[in-house]
Image (cartoon, rainbow, N blue to C red; front, side):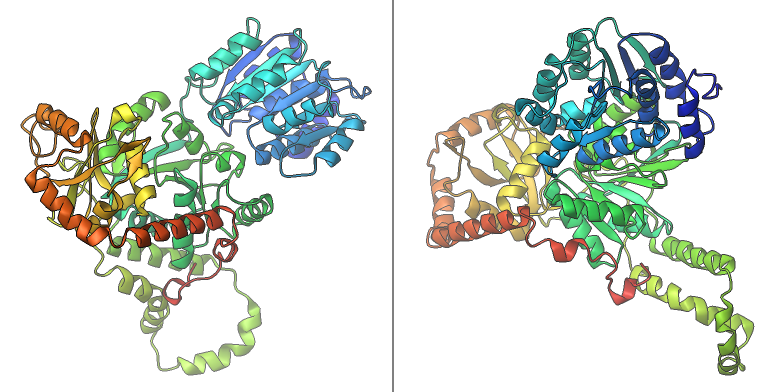
Length: 620
């Protein structure tokens, strides 16, 4: 492996490298730095998150710019405020011995006037989020018409976040002869299109294979019933006493809910998502970096700014809609040469998505079992024993030893040890002694790992793929409309023009009442109770095969009236028409409540009380 001296960096930058404690370059640095230093070329670099990409483009840019000039010569675009600030701080650290260097971060959530003032002082390098950068360009507060080097960092994520138009507009206002360096963990079509439109014969370097996960991360999955997802999360945390993790959810609402539940159950947890104010985000990230929070529950977008090298586990509480996103998630652990574990909690219906992810990351997932209660008790007991064994003695307690020894003078060594450890062991034993097995057999034929207990209601709904739904989107639609939890809607089976789904029977009346005279995109949505019987083809569910269902869907779409359906609808309307006004008022109240939550007004108390715990789990 080369040294930084052999890469061709000048003495001032090498001095900064020594100050930072860097010893040898990472693979992406070793490949990219010589090319960018010695050639005026465009570059596409594909490397997993956490492999040192900032230094790979940062050192060459710092060596090539003229620090004696006040003209903006370098522009670095990144997807989030946190990442923007991180890159700017690292660039300042790399160039701390370059006199006159001014690196300015431009991002939303802070004073645009202050940022414009910093740029006006003479910023050779600007690090910016696309939205704020475009805003400042339109106000003529920055001038990028003379930049020589542009960097698109985490390009795939910027496009996933909807910045394609902003990036296009920004780059269109830069010189044609500049060098553009694109760094990305994955290479979807949209990123390739940006490269084609704004780069000229770019060189390409790849660390590992395209989209491949780093070799420092092991990949595991746990198969559970959908309704047991949260219990599985808690057991994984308890089975790893020294866990320092990022837990990923799909939506802001689920992120907040999971974090609040963890805090309520005594875990040091916090939420990070887009509904938080910038001040709240800063507080949460500070608590996470100082390990006051050990389980950070985050959405994919919010987690882009997380750059903490010691994360031990990434837990995919829910898989993302975009398969490629898994690469970014797993990249939160196994950084800076350390090892990490990426866990996925899945229901039966989601297992097939793991196969697609395996092809992308070129790694295999290992099926593991959620530990049972006694296994967790044993792990926690031995963890406590090791901590006590390795604890440095505080001799301030010496003055109390005589009194303590007197208290235990009739207690044998074995009995004393048992008493001491029972304080911790009993708490876990009482909690887990009757805990059920959460694991689902891989061959279980039920769609989401649920058993046919007879306590579930099966429904027909006359919307499907032609209405823009797949099973996941329909599940989200139903839980949002009905105000149910994500795991309260299950066995979702989406067809072309109709679908099926299940809830527990306790929700049946609520479901049927809600969809009385309910319209979606201008047409009535009809929901009916059906049977849960697979046809002989093995995939369909309902009262009959696919052809009859399509006919049935057409008839339902015409809102036909037969004796049985009229009778059923009549019975339903007797109980629902009188209460329809109340139900609509309740829906309005629920909407207002959701609005208040989205404003962040009711969130402060639950979000930051990470040290509070219930007595039985006060160990956290």
